[in-house]
Length: 311
Image (cartoon, rainbow, N blue to C red):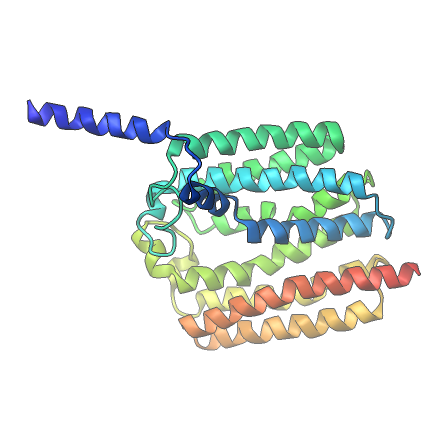
């Protein structure tokens, strides 16, 4: 009887946990972690860059706020669905085992519900307050991140390429939110962030390759063989330099941006080279820090120089 009653009690406990929606301090903190506020802020920054360039410096605050709300809801959705799908692999890695699901602070039911509801609300909100194109592109971004990139991590290192597409979409969403038709300049903003992501993600994958392997996630190409990861990171960092000059080519920036883009690109390539020469956790961390410096800096200078040209 005890052997039968124990599973029943366990199922009852799991059910009670799944319907416990009390807003304790711990639960609120868990919701905050689920939303990934830092990523949301970075996304909003890149949305603002696309919005500013497409609007040629003319800002309409209310439409931008509507776009920001809709995109932020999509960020919450993507993060929630990602953490729901990866709840078992997250429990196997030290860097993720304290997330809301593996730590038991939120139930799978809650997180899945949040992910689905915020995606639906994001789409409807953007469709009705901004424009249909922004709504569809935002939904596509969520689907690619949660529905393609996340599950592919268990099967192939090609997941990084797939994940880089939704990762590069925020400035495109900002551009679309103005109602300005998409153009080659829009594509150039997408390309900068798309290429930037590879040294960034490879540095993270190298730093935690042991944990990823333990969770059976295929995050490193060629199983992390010596020099392969470093050479790929270096190649993308070098390619990023000419790619970053595309907005200048299309007339959206001038020589000031060109100078800073080359200097920042060289800085990023230098740390990629150091990682290539000595693939260690230390050089990977330095490359990761360089990536955090590069992206906001190059986009900020691009925006400032674009506004300078308009005046």
